Image (tube, rainbow, N blue to C red; front, side, top):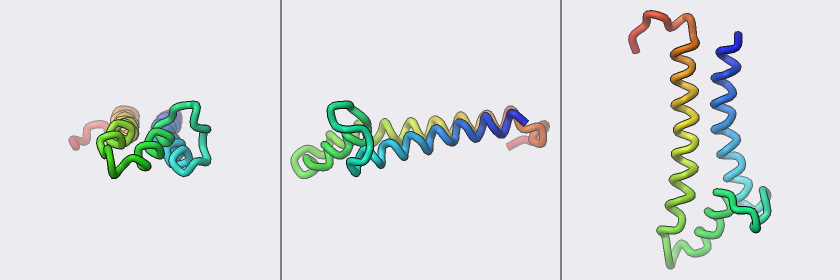
Amino acid sequence: MAAPVIVQGTLGMAYAVLTEAALGFIGAGVQPPTPTWGNMLQYAFGLLDRSPILSIAPGMAIFLMVLSFNFVGDALRDVLDPRLKGVIT
């Protein structure tokens, strides 16, 4: 019973990262003195015509964080799901 909860928790963390970044980008999240990836993307979006490289770091950080949470959740599902024992994927 704990396995689905653990897997859902890792996928929920990826959703939380995306939600925070989206809210920070549109200005509804944490206010600008506190650095967040969404705030960084919002700032870089204003400078996109002069320096597009500024948006790559926070964008890649968000992408890699969400991807890693999804990979961890998938690996945990493979390890903890008793129905997959003996199945080669």
